[in-house]
Image 1 (tube, rainbow, N blue to C red):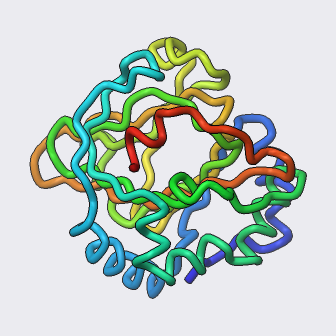
Image 2 (image 1 turned 135 degrees about the vertical axis):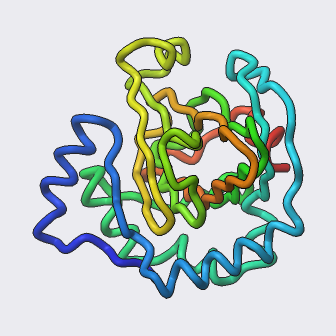
Image 3 (image 1 turned 45 degrees about the vertical axis):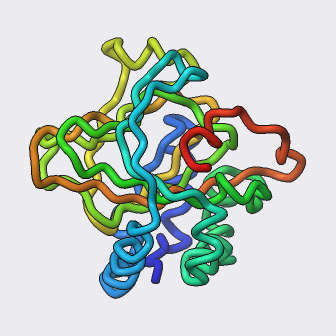
Length: 223
């Protein structure tokens, strides 16, 4: 299902992640895995909920997206639950972070499905409750000009996303990225035209001892 980076590349990836709080993992999902996960996501999307609101806990940033929370995914998809807990994947994440990575206990946030599928759909500015977000792309706009880009800036100040220091990154189907998401302001830029889709699985991970209380924002988006 996964096409993980070979061990010889992991030191350079770890240094990049330590420097940037972000590292791209192109082709992380194998072609066969992408086909299987894409079908699983389409099946799950029938149970997903449309969200259109401004997040009060994140500077009233917009949410225009269709989502499915981890508790519902756990009930409906043994495949995604199994992938989330994959030992080799977690070994990779531990090597990139430089410390032990463990699964998130919170059933709502641990693995979620996010779908942008209408013009203007966006996942507005935020930081996450847990240290790591591994984002897996099942569908993505073909060109950066189409929107659906990850935009991020080191630090928790959401206003920094509107400064020249913010970075924009395009990813394609089958790609992944790892983000130090608890201390990196980030958002997804709006889809620019009809007919585009951006479907991702977001796997949240943490470190031992960091299973604390989460902000109410997750329940607004995924409960």
